[in-house]
Length: 515
Ligand code: ATP
Image 1: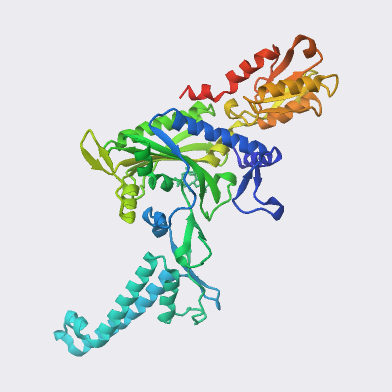
Image 2: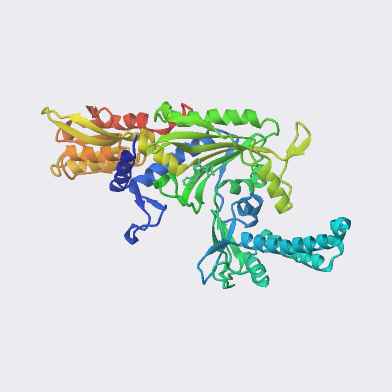
């Protein structure tokens, strides 16, 4: 598939109410999108397919809904604050941007150079008899400079650990560190550049009140591990699932809903006995790929990609990649996260996060297998693989074309469209009567405008599996014409059979039964 198709899909998503750019009337907000009337239905159906497959079908997996805001220490424990941070500072005169840590380190290097000079001088003076260690330990100027270095380093490291950026700036000011271009110390405040979005809690704007929009949903699960295990009386192995928003201030964000700044994740953390994680890792790889393939988007569109370079906390990791219009790319990650997260939270919170294994009669911190899939990426996978432009032969021998979304019927936004052939003779009333009996079980749409052909095209374009037409005969024989999206076959069926026909095709139960 080419970039061209990708552009068509983006245009189609907008034209048919799937995806709009956020705040479009203000020219949009980069890498942020809104789901329209059909998009939100599709999204909800994907969520249900995932949630039911995880939570309903596995009695040892339960679901939670944690808050987006979490205690800031969470992100220190998880490594997100420390690991992805660049403290940035700007010089107001030259407009040059620096990394605060680099400025300070360069300053320390200058002091270091002074010590080296003293040593060089002394060496020349004393010649062969010079003892560098003794000189470093006794020379007043060297000691003074070394003390300076130690003190600056300590202050700087403490400030970074405490996330005290004002103090980082103060270190720069107190040490008369100037911009190499302007020569001034007219510095802005120090800002962390991190993938995490931050905001303030309450009205006081001091650093201690900084909280983050979570960059992943997983941590909401880890901090609730004990709550769920105890209240749910969960026995290892067990899982906790969650669907929710995550936020990342992505630098490269130009791939439609593939890479967004606000997106949704569906994550499940599976807690296992240490030593059994590799077996569970393999098990979850199998379970997850089956979930994907059952949708029927084409087995050739999936592949595993094992990570060569593992994150410091992982002992195995793989991605399920999907063939998007922009090529094979990560759709879902499956990671063996060891006991890293729970151990970190245990350390940072001072609370024990263990499991008492009554069979082994001992307590341990469980190991974790994570499955993490982006809901929006899943949406894009479905949309892009179901989008088809087709040429169709008309009855009179001429050719026509249609755009059809062959969305798996159970996930389709609208399941049934109901059309009266004409807007009179009691046909709309009959159509509405049918609508009212089916609407409780299926998302139905009523349409009476335009020719039946045009109405079919509109429904094809949003992926509606069935359309029915109510004509004059319906009033006497209680039958309607039902038309199938994929085969375009039409058939006359009893109104009383509609529920059964629809249910067989669109009920998610039949999809779940195949898992
Ligand atoms: P990538 O390498 O593509 O940035 P990642 O490895 O950082 O992704 P994870 O942290 O493993 O992603 O997140 C799990 C899942 O969340 C990914 O497989 C993806 O489906 C989804 N995801 C991550 N970042 C984004 C984003 N910016 N927009 C949409 N979905 C995302």
